[in-house]
Length: 280
Ligand SMILES: [Zn+2]
Image 1: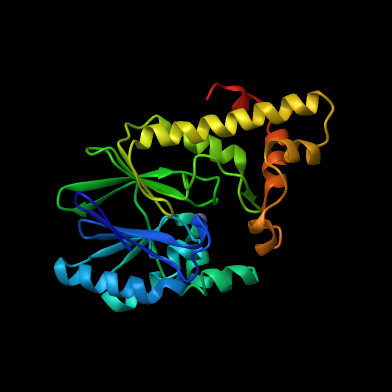
Image 2: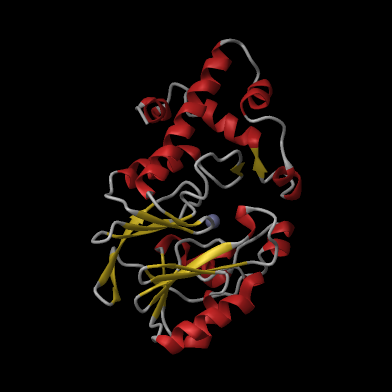
């Protein structure tokens, strides 16, 4: 499905359409492709990229983090277009050497192609007068960055947003870092957010604030229930309900319990407590 917002164009792809996470969006701005979609969406991506390249040449690719639904076609596209790939320096080894993945990830997103990427600079020109700033945004993944077009207030948010009310935390996500990244991005002057799964999110500043507020209040509610003597399982039940389909499909990689436990952990007498207790 083609997405358009001014000069930004995007395509959603992926084999399975059962949730927001199972398909992802890559975007084109100026002469640059931002993220490359999952290997399971390769035919859709290839068609999109060929058409875009014929319209105006694509001269480089940026990937926002190493996950296979964002960087999974970077190697194939590098071969197709013969252009450089830029990536956060934290994931260059993983993109070149591969990394271990659970079975459901192969089934939903497919096996990523390997690629030799260059370190993404702090600021990069993407042509047609657009500059993108690198904004570190760990939490969803340790290497993730967002890309900010300051003149237009556009944020290519990778997987920072996805939804304002997440119910699950994945095993490799860090809630405290995620909240810190949302706070960092909240300081930017934002108009539109280009999300890696949701697509184009109008009123981006409001969306980021809504997610931040939800997570901080979820934590406060979890802590209040613990102080009232409830177990973490009871708290999950009360605030998020039973584990859902995503928990079983991912064999527990995505878990509501993990989100609640992370809320409770972040409120202990550690530096995390200060991070959580600042107002959303
Ligand atoms: Zn991701």
